[in-house]
Length: 389
Image 1 (cartoon, helix red, strand yellow):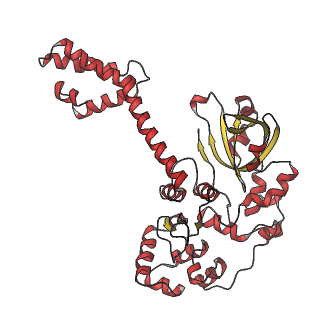
Image 2 (image 1 turned 180 degrees about the horizontal axis):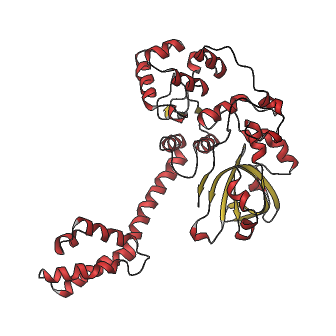
Image 3 (image 1 turned 90 degrees about the horizontal axis):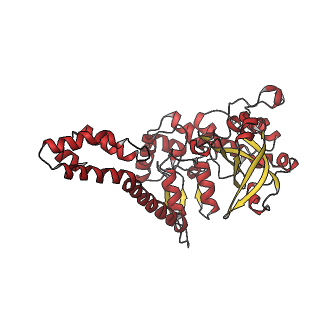
C-alpha cells in the first residue's frame, strides 16, 4: 500500500480500497479492478512498464497467499497463548473473558462453570472485595488464585457506583449498609441491586435480609412456586441478578423429569458407545448455522453436569425447525457419534421443554401451572441463547 501511495500517488481512500481488495483474496478478479489505476499511474510518472506490472503482481500474489498466511500466523499465536493460559492459569483466562463481555459464544454462566470444572475457586460479587471487573485473590497455601466476580456482572449496576464503592472501601472497610450507602454515596437503586445480587455478604447480610433492610420493608414471604418444584429461591435470585449461580443450576430441579425421559446427564454422553441411541436434555446455550455448513445446525445445551453438542442435519432441522430455533430448553434424542476424541449427538428428534423451564421461574402460561403457585414477579431463570445464523 505504501508503494501504491508513493509510486502511483494513491490517496488514503484508494489505498484502503487496495487493502480491502487484498482481504477478499478468494474473490478472483476483485484486486484486478485497481490494476489499471496503479500501473497506468506509475507509467505516467516515469516508471518502466515492466517494473510497474511486477509491483502490482507482487501485490496480487500477496492478496492470494500472503494475506491469509499472515492472518493464520497471528491466529495460531493467539490460540497458543490462550491455550497455555487456560491450561496453566485458568483463573486468569476466565477473568479476562468475563471482563471482555459481551463477546463470543458463551455467556458468563458457562465461563464460570468451565472455570470451576478446572479447579478454579470462584467467589461471588461482594461489596467487601469486588471491584467493577472480575479480579484475582490469594488463596492460603494455593498456587492458583481465586476468581472474585466483579460488580459488572450485576444486571443494571453502573460502573460509577462500583468505582465509588472501591474508593470508599480503600479508606476503611464498610461496617453497615448505612455506612456503605453514606460513604459510597449510593442511590437506593444501587443498594437494591446489590441486595438482589446477594453482594452484601461482607456486611453479614444475606439476600432476603438485605432486601428488606435496604428497602425498609417487612420480610417477604417465601415464593410458593419455587418451593412447589423444589427450586432453591437463592438460585433463582442469582440468575435474576447476575445471570449465573454458584449455588446450583436450574436444570438440576428438572432432573427427575429428564430421568423419566431416560436422558443422560451431559457429562455422561462421552461414556456412551459410538452409535448408541441416547437422549440429552438441557438449556440451549448456542445455536450455529454457518453458511458453509450446507444447512447443518449445531446446538450446544447445558445441564447441571456440563455441556453437550448436537448436530442437526437439514432433514431433521426442517422437521423440527420451531424447536431447533425457538426452544429455550431441549430434549434431544439421537445417536452418539465419536471421531478423533470428539463426541457429539446426531439429533433425530427434538422436544421443546421450555414450558418446564418456565414453570421454575413463573414464566409459564396460566394453564401450565396452578394459579395458587403464581409468583408475583416476572422472573426469567435462564438468559436467552446466543444464536449465530
